[in-house]
Length: 279
Image (cartoon, rainbow, N blue to C red; front, side):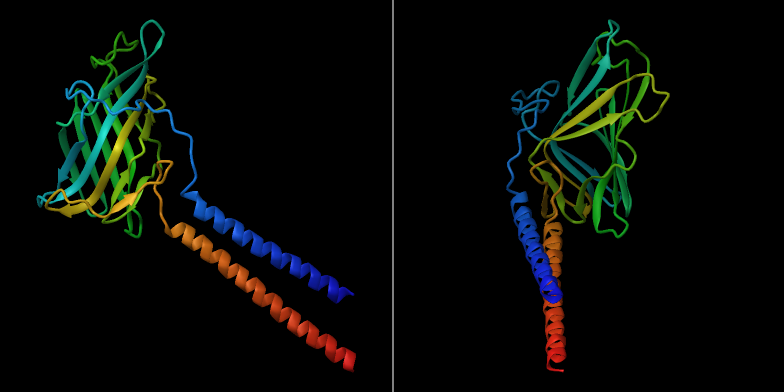
């Protein structure tokens, strides 16, 4: 009787394991097909004006060359910078500026770290790139914005004359991409920056909106030649196909081990029972 109960229990465990494997496999297959609600963005239609001081009509390309003349960092996007501040009347305001096609571009390129600096209309935007410890992927570890509150973009600002420095929080890991490939995202990417200094007096918060973003670092190429595309997922984050494969393989191995283990247990238990009955 005990043998029957144990066999019945293990059969239920086996069926439950197989059910979980099929469930998770289906979930992994449908993950990339899930329909998400559209995000409310700063702007939803591509601007049509060609003026550098208003809405740009096309994507802008920003290129940083290394000391050898080869391209180190390449960024293509339609960018908008929006800064939240308070005016002297105590009202919360937003000031916007599009990233123009013509920038003051500088930076540094090293083997495992690099930086590109974009300057326009009194704003300085720094992007810092790094490689993972194994050197297999590159990513953005910090985005930093520097300006003064005297900038004409701010109307009736409450605290003029402040030097403001905003950035992403420590430990930022944006756009992780295999080295040699270009990060591409058709979704609008939003990078939020705020003061990391507890003594900050501005209280400003900045959001960088990047549409149709294409980016690559550690290129070391002599022309504007992109590497193979590494597409972000539907929610704007990167998508690596190795993760679903690894999880699915693990579930398959676990299911096989359960079946084999149960078969061996039942074989030896039945043999032992038959031997005891014959004795």
